[in-house]
Image (cartoon, rainbow, N blue to C red; front, side, top):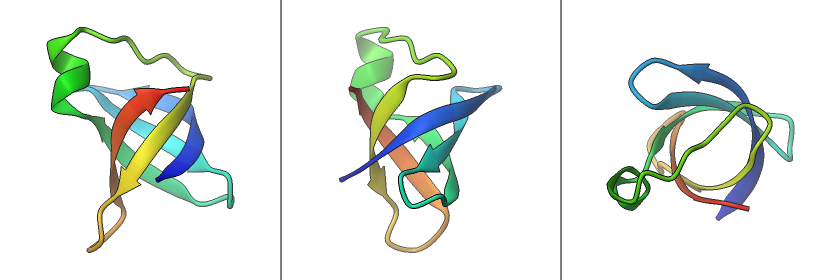
Length: 63
């Protein structure tokens, strides 16, 4: 699990997140966060689960 800060909110619950290492990834909301209508705003610290194949990540919780 990695942590980062939401830099930009994009359409369809996509977010541009800057990781602690300085890397920027494209992230989407996890299903449980959509189900429980948990809001994510620009500037929020979030916990991510990185995709092993590429530059995408899943936002699993707000910190």
